[in-house]
Amino acid sequence: MRINEIQFSDAVPVDGYGPGFFRVGGEKIEGAVLLAGGQPQAWGGLDDMETLLELSGSVDVVFVGMGAEIAHIPAALRSRLEEAGLGVEVMNSPAACRTYNVLLSEGRRVALAALPVADSQSG
Image (cartoon, rainbow, N blue to C red; front, side, top):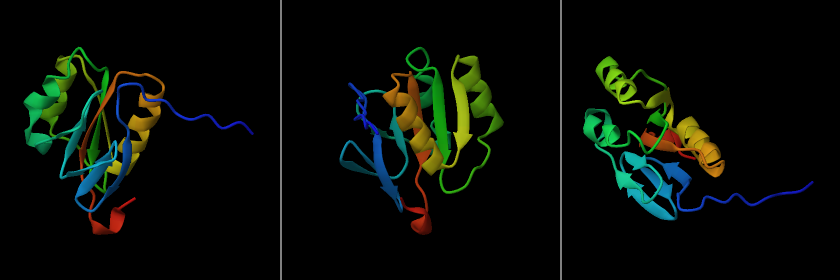
């Protein structure tokens, strides 16, 4: 069996997560996180629509992690993102992190906007 090391070029993958935080590129980020290519940044959550809209043109899909459980994002948020030309995929945060990492390793133009998980869901 041949094992290849994944290369991420300039982008940074999610290394892990825990109660209330994400670990990205070796850095611990408290609370919600936004990743789009370069450096991770704090994200204001579902009310922070403008930050997500700024991704238009630089990414094709935004994976929205809703914490430990899958939930719908507000319809107005989804509509605005789609109108801006962004694909939106909503899932729980662990699945969103994994999917983001896989597509990032393939060189895809993706972003992750994720809410943290609760104490019992860390990974």
